Length: 235
Image: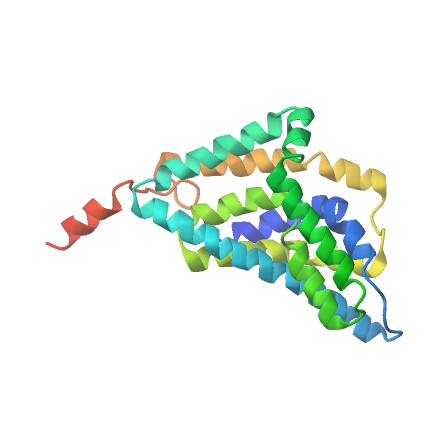
Protein backbone atom coordinates (compact mmCIF):
# COMPACT_ATOMS: atom_id res chain seq x y z
CA UNK A 1 0.00 0.00 0.00
CA UNK A 2 1.20 3.52 -0.84
CA UNK A 3 2.58 5.06 2.36
CA UNK A 4 0.84 8.36 1.49
CA UNK A 5 -2.45 6.61 2.25
CA UNK A 6 -1.38 6.88 5.88
CA UNK A 7 -1.63 10.67 5.67
CA UNK A 8 -5.22 10.50 4.37
CA UNK A 9 -6.22 7.94 6.99
CA UNK A 10 -4.74 10.08 9.73
CA UNK A 11 -6.39 13.29 8.55
CA UNK A 12 -9.89 11.88 8.12
CA UNK A 13 -9.58 9.83 11.28
CA UNK A 14 -8.29 12.77 13.32
CA UNK A 15 -11.82 13.83 14.20
CA UNK A 16 -12.20 10.45 15.87
CA UNK A 17 -8.87 11.10 17.62
CA UNK A 18 -10.27 14.30 19.13
CA UNK A 19 -13.01 12.25 20.75
CA UNK A 20 -10.60 9.60 22.08
CA UNK A 21 -7.40 11.54 22.87
CA UNK A 22 -8.84 15.06 22.89
CA UNK A 23 -9.40 15.08 26.67
CA UNK A 24 -5.70 14.32 27.16
CA UNK A 25 -4.65 17.11 24.78
CA UNK A 26 -7.01 19.56 26.48
CA UNK A 27 -5.74 18.57 29.94
CA UNK A 28 -2.06 19.16 29.10
CA UNK A 29 -0.46 21.36 31.77
CA UNK A 30 0.13 25.05 31.08
CA UNK A 31 3.41 26.15 32.63
CA UNK A 32 4.13 29.41 30.81
CA UNK A 33 2.55 32.73 29.89
CA UNK A 34 4.42 32.81 26.58
CA UNK A 35 2.23 31.91 23.61
CA UNK A 36 5.29 30.80 21.64
CA UNK A 37 6.50 28.45 24.37
CA UNK A 38 2.95 27.11 24.70
CA UNK A 39 2.83 26.44 20.94
CA UNK A 40 6.28 24.85 21.03
CA UNK A 41 5.34 22.52 23.89
CA UNK A 42 2.13 21.43 22.12
CA UNK A 43 4.09 20.73 18.94
CA UNK A 44 6.50 18.60 20.96
CA UNK A 45 3.54 16.68 22.42
CA UNK A 46 2.24 15.86 18.94
CA UNK A 47 5.71 15.01 17.64
CA UNK A 48 5.95 12.50 20.47
CA UNK A 49 2.82 10.78 19.19
CA UNK A 50 4.21 10.71 15.64
CA UNK A 51 7.50 9.18 16.77
CA UNK A 52 5.73 6.40 18.67
CA UNK A 53 3.45 5.67 15.70
CA UNK A 54 6.49 5.52 13.40
CA UNK A 55 8.36 3.15 15.71
CA UNK A 56 5.41 0.77 16.00
CA UNK A 57 4.80 1.07 12.25
CA UNK A 58 8.41 0.04 11.59
CA UNK A 59 7.90 -3.14 13.62
CA UNK A 60 4.66 -3.97 11.83
CA UNK A 61 6.25 -3.22 8.47
CA UNK A 62 9.13 -5.56 9.30
CA UNK A 63 6.70 -8.29 10.35
CA UNK A 64 4.77 -7.76 7.12
CA UNK A 65 8.05 -8.08 5.20
CA UNK A 66 8.73 -11.46 6.82
CA UNK A 67 5.26 -12.64 5.84
CA UNK A 68 5.72 -11.34 2.29
CA UNK A 69 9.00 -13.25 1.94
CA UNK A 70 7.14 -16.35 3.11
CA UNK A 71 4.66 -15.85 0.28
CA UNK A 72 1.74 -14.39 2.23
CA UNK A 73 1.72 -10.81 0.88
CA UNK A 74 -1.62 -11.14 -0.91
CA UNK A 75 -3.18 -13.26 1.84
CA UNK A 76 -2.31 -10.82 4.62
CA UNK A 77 -3.79 -7.89 2.68
CA UNK A 78 -7.08 -9.74 2.14
CA UNK A 79 -7.07 -10.98 5.75
CA UNK A 80 -6.77 -7.49 7.23
CA UNK A 81 -9.42 -6.18 4.87
CA UNK A 82 -11.86 -8.79 6.10
CA UNK A 83 -10.90 -8.21 9.75
CA UNK A 84 -11.54 -4.46 9.46
CA UNK A 85 -14.97 -5.03 7.93
CA UNK A 86 -15.84 -7.53 10.66
CA UNK A 87 -14.70 -5.06 13.31
CA UNK A 88 -16.96 -2.37 11.87
CA UNK A 89 -20.05 -4.59 11.85
CA UNK A 90 -19.39 -6.21 15.24
CA UNK A 91 -21.94 -5.28 17.93
CA UNK A 92 -20.75 -2.71 20.44
CA UNK A 93 -21.05 -5.28 23.25
CA UNK A 94 -18.33 -7.44 21.71
CA UNK A 95 -16.05 -4.44 21.19
CA UNK A 96 -16.59 -3.42 24.81
CA UNK A 97 -15.75 -6.95 25.95
CA UNK A 98 -12.47 -6.77 24.00
CA UNK A 99 -11.62 -3.53 25.80
CA UNK A 100 -11.91 -5.45 29.08
CA UNK A 101 -9.34 -8.10 28.17
CA UNK A 102 -6.25 -8.43 30.37
CA UNK A 103 -3.75 -7.26 27.73
CA UNK A 104 -5.85 -4.27 26.69
CA UNK A 105 -6.38 -3.15 30.28
CA UNK A 106 -2.72 -3.75 31.21
CA UNK A 107 -1.48 -1.49 28.40
CA UNK A 108 -4.14 1.13 29.10
CA UNK A 109 -3.46 1.16 32.86
CA UNK A 110 0.31 1.41 32.30
CA UNK A 111 -0.05 4.38 29.95
CA UNK A 112 -2.56 6.17 32.17
CA UNK A 113 -0.40 5.61 35.26
CA UNK A 114 2.62 6.99 33.41
CA UNK A 115 0.54 10.00 32.35
CA UNK A 116 -0.18 10.87 35.97
CA UNK A 117 3.52 10.72 36.88
CA UNK A 118 4.76 12.79 33.93
CA UNK A 119 1.97 15.38 34.27
CA UNK A 120 3.61 16.54 37.52
CA UNK A 121 6.68 17.79 35.65
CA UNK A 122 5.53 20.96 33.92
CA UNK A 123 8.03 21.40 31.11
CA UNK A 124 8.25 21.10 27.34
CA UNK A 125 10.20 17.86 27.61
CA UNK A 126 7.50 16.34 29.82
CA UNK A 127 4.89 17.09 27.15
CA UNK A 128 7.08 15.33 24.61
CA UNK A 129 7.12 12.24 26.86
CA UNK A 130 3.34 12.47 27.26
CA UNK A 131 3.08 12.44 23.47
CA UNK A 132 5.28 9.34 23.28
CA UNK A 133 3.01 7.62 25.79
CA UNK A 134 -0.12 8.83 24.04
CA UNK A 135 0.95 6.92 20.94
CA UNK A 136 0.78 3.68 22.95
CA UNK A 137 -2.87 4.08 23.96
CA UNK A 138 -5.08 1.29 22.57
CA UNK A 139 -7.17 2.71 19.73
CA UNK A 140 -9.23 0.96 17.07
CA UNK A 141 -8.37 3.50 14.41
CA UNK A 142 -4.65 3.19 15.09
CA UNK A 143 -5.06 -0.57 14.65
CA UNK A 144 -6.56 0.07 11.21
CA UNK A 145 -3.56 2.22 10.31
CA UNK A 146 -1.15 -0.45 11.61
CA UNK A 147 -2.83 -2.96 9.32
CA UNK A 148 -1.93 -0.62 6.47
CA UNK A 149 1.64 -0.37 7.74
CA UNK A 150 1.96 -4.14 7.78
CA UNK A 151 0.74 -4.47 4.19
CA UNK A 152 3.55 -2.16 3.04
CA UNK A 153 5.81 -5.14 3.65
CA UNK A 154 8.85 -3.07 4.51
CA UNK A 155 10.53 -1.73 7.67
CA UNK A 156 11.00 1.84 6.40
CA UNK A 157 7.68 1.94 4.54
CA UNK A 158 5.85 0.80 7.68
CA UNK A 159 7.54 3.56 9.68
CA UNK A 160 6.77 6.12 6.96
CA UNK A 161 3.15 5.00 6.73
CA UNK A 162 2.54 5.46 10.45
CA UNK A 163 4.56 8.70 10.60
CA UNK A 164 2.33 10.14 7.87
CA UNK A 165 -0.68 8.81 9.77
CA UNK A 166 0.51 10.76 12.80
CA UNK A 167 1.11 13.92 10.79
CA UNK A 168 -2.40 13.52 9.34
CA UNK A 169 -3.80 13.80 12.87
CA UNK A 170 -1.40 16.63 13.71
CA UNK A 171 -3.51 19.71 12.73
CA UNK A 172 -6.66 18.70 14.62
CA UNK A 173 -4.83 17.42 17.68
CA UNK A 174 -2.61 20.53 17.81
CA UNK A 175 -5.69 22.73 17.61
CA UNK A 176 -7.35 20.67 20.35
CA UNK A 177 -4.34 21.06 22.64
CA UNK A 178 -4.30 24.83 22.04
CA UNK A 179 -7.95 25.75 21.81
CA UNK A 180 -9.67 23.08 23.87
CA UNK A 181 -13.15 22.12 22.73
CA UNK A 182 -12.99 23.92 19.42
CA UNK A 183 -15.32 21.49 17.64
CA UNK A 184 -18.99 21.45 18.49
CA UNK A 185 -20.05 18.11 20.01
CA UNK A 186 -22.85 17.63 17.47
CA UNK A 187 -20.47 18.27 14.57
CA UNK A 188 -17.98 15.81 16.05
CA UNK A 189 -20.70 13.18 16.37
CA UNK A 190 -21.69 13.63 12.73
CA UNK A 191 -18.07 13.30 11.62
CA UNK A 192 -17.59 10.20 13.76
CA UNK A 193 -20.42 8.53 11.87
CA UNK A 194 -18.27 8.72 8.74
CA UNK A 195 -15.39 6.86 10.39
CA UNK A 196 -16.86 3.34 9.83
CA UNK A 197 -17.41 4.19 6.16
CA UNK A 198 -13.79 5.29 5.88
CA UNK A 199 -12.64 2.08 7.58
CA UNK A 200 -14.70 -0.07 5.18
CA UNK A 201 -13.30 1.86 2.20
CA UNK A 202 -9.78 1.16 3.44
CA UNK A 203 -10.69 -2.51 3.97
CA UNK A 204 -11.91 -2.76 0.37
CA UNK A 205 -8.59 -1.32 -0.82
CA UNK A 206 -6.76 -3.98 1.21
CA UNK A 207 -8.88 -6.72 -0.35
CA UNK A 208 -8.47 -5.35 -3.89
CA UNK A 209 -4.72 -5.13 -3.35
CA UNK A 210 -4.62 -8.74 -2.21
CA UNK A 211 -6.63 -9.89 -5.24
CA UNK A 212 -3.79 -8.59 -7.47
CA UNK A 213 -6.03 -7.53 -10.36
CA UNK A 214 -3.33 -5.52 -12.10
CA UNK A 215 -5.03 -2.15 -11.50
CA UNK A 216 -2.32 0.53 -11.00
CA UNK A 217 -2.12 1.94 -7.42
CA UNK A 218 -5.37 0.22 -6.38
CA UNK A 219 -4.68 -3.45 -7.09
CA UNK A 220 -1.17 -3.84 -8.53
CA UNK A 221 -0.01 -7.22 -9.74
CA UNK A 222 1.61 -9.03 -6.83
CA UNK A 223 3.16 -12.44 -6.43
CA UNK A 224 2.86 -14.90 -3.59
CA UNK A 225 6.07 -16.59 -4.62
CA UNK A 226 8.90 -14.05 -4.28
CA UNK A 227 11.54 -16.69 -3.63
CA UNK A 228 10.66 -18.57 -6.80
CA UNK A 229 10.73 -15.39 -8.87
CA UNK A 230 14.13 -14.47 -7.50
CA UNK A 231 15.48 -17.88 -8.53
CA UNK A 232 14.12 -17.50 -12.07
CA UNK A 233 15.56 -14.00 -12.47
CA UNK A 234 19.03 -15.25 -11.57
CA UNK A 235 19.33 -17.23 -14.83
